[in-house]
Image 1: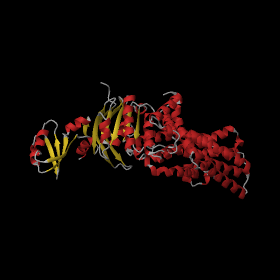
Image 2: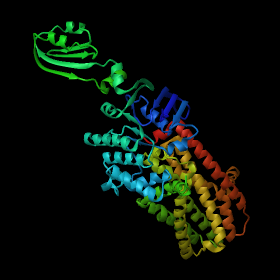
Image 3: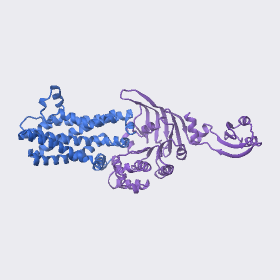
Image 4: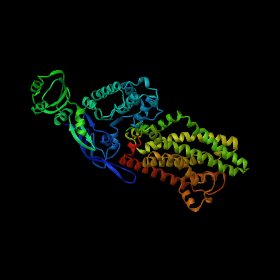
Length: 310
Length: 261
C-alpha cells in the first residue's frame, strides 16, 4: 500500500494575538489522505477547514501534533514538501498589475523554474486553463472566473504531486463552476495527483471526492466515503407524495423502515430506510386518496452536512 | 536545485518589483521627482547661504545618500508590501523560498534603481552646483555605495519584519524608518552636534561611518569605515535571522493567513 499523501496525527491550532490570547480553532485532528485520491474537507463557516488546509500545505504551523506530507516529516522537510505541492484558493489574489503570463513567470521563478522549461510550463498552463486570450491582460482586469482559472494555472505550474484547493468554485457563476469542476476532475485523472479539496458545495464534494471529512468547531465529526456517510447517518431516501383526501399518517410512522414522516396538508414526506421493503405497504395506506404526484429523492451530502452541522 | 533554478528564486522578487514599478506612474516620482526636489533644495540652499565648496560637498553628499537610501530600502520593503497590498502573500510563502531569496532579489532591483538615481544626481550636481561627486575615484564610490545599499537592505528587512509581526498597519514603517535613521546618522550635519544618547545611536548605524568616510575625501577628517563595514555585515546577518524568525512566527500565529484576507 502506498504512503498516504497527508498523514496527520493529533493536530491542534490556536490563533494567538500579539499578547498571547487566542482561541483554539483545530482540536486534535487525525486523518489520512490517500495517495492519488480527492479528499474533501467539508464544514460550516469557521469550522477550521482553511486553517487545516493551510497546515497541510505548510503555510502555517500547528501548535501540537505530527504531520507527514508526501511521506516526509513536515517540520524537517518544509522546503522539499513545498517544491512538490501547490494550492489555489477562493478569491484568488495576485499582484494587480502583473499580466497572466507575468504572474505565472513570477511564481514559476519562485519555484526555481527557468529557461525553456519555465516558458513551456507557462504555455501549457495557459492552454490547459483556456487563458490564451487573457495572456497579456493584467490580473486586476480579469473577471472572477478568469482569476480563479489563473489561480489553478499557477497551482499546476510546478507539476505538484499534491494539490490543495480551498473553495475553488466559490463566487463563480454556475457555468464557470461546472467548467472548473470538470477541470479539477481532469487534472486529477490526467496528472495523477492527490487533491485536498475544501468546499461548501456538497454537490461538488459528492461529484469529486472519494473520501470526505466533516469539520465542526475545529473537530472532525465524520470521516468516510460520501456513500458510507449517508448510510452511517441513516439518511434514508425521501418519499414525497402529494395527495388529496385523508390518510392515517400515524400508521405510516409505525411501519418498519419508516424513519420519519413529515406531513403538511396534501403533502407527506416519508424518510425511508433502504434496508426495509416498506414502499408497497405505504402506498396501500394511500389507497383511499387521490395521489397527484410521487417522487423519491435520494439523500445527498447536503443532507449529511445539515445533519452533521446541527 | 540547479544554480540557475536557485538564481531564479532570487530574480523572482526583482522581476515582480520591476514589472510593478514600470506600470506605476509614481515610480517616476520616486526615481526623478523626489530626488530632484531633494538635490535642488539643498543645492539652492548652499547658493543662498553662499557657503564654500567644502560645505557644499558636505550637504550634497547627504542629499544624494538620503535619496539613494530611500529608493533602495523601499524596493526591499516592496517585496512584501506589494504582496500584502494585493493580498497575495500566501502565494509567496507557500513556494519553496527563503527570506534571503526575497531580500537579495528585491535588493538587486533596488541597487539598479538606486544606481539610476545616483547617476542622475551625480550629473545634475556636477553641472548645476559644480560638485564632482566622483572626484575620489571609483573605489571610494564603490565602498560608499555598498554602505548605503547595505543600510538600505537592513531598513527594508526591518520594515518586512514589522509587517510580519504587527500586520498591515505596520506598512507606515516603510516611510518612517529611513527618516529616523537619516536623522540620527547625520545626513546634513556631523553627529557630534547631536545629544550624547543620540550620538551613541548614530555610532550604531553603518551609514554614519560611510558618510564620514566619503566626506573625508572632500573635507579632511577622520573616519572608521571598517567599523561601518563590520556593522553593515552584522546587521545584514542579523536582519536575515530576524526576518526568518518573523516568518516562522507569522506561520505560528497565522498572520500570514490574515495578511491574505
